[in-house]
Length: 191
Image (cartoon, rainbow, N blue to C red; front, side, top):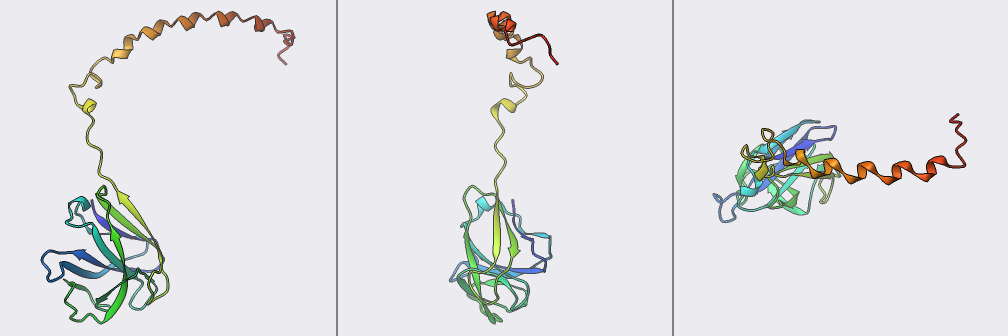
């Protein structure tokens, strides 16, 4: 179950992430980008079941190109201006830009998550752009009665085939011969 970004905007979007990484120190976070997402395209960033991540916290930023309209938050981080990168959070080598990332916390119930980039906002400002998050939930566990040995499975006769309600006393209802069948308002002319 992946973390994905979908670009519903008319221009190419570029995404950067801040994720937990125990291999980084002194702060156990890494930053990576720029993931290119064409219009009407969905890109899977990683395919890990989100429930297995060591922390549900992370952040992201997207724009339509260096200094272009953006989807931003209120957590400012140093990253390379327009070069690809994948480094520990504390490594600011070649990080010549500061962008406002959106902080996100995954629910422990989500196995995957897709962010849909709708419309960007102004460049170089925090809290810009419109984006939707769509959680993915794991499939439900198999029901006990879905097993082959279940009395309800298709190779058994269902116990309700011989229902005592097949011979309902309501089949011969006294209301079948209602006195209202001969209503004075019924002149017998159905036309």
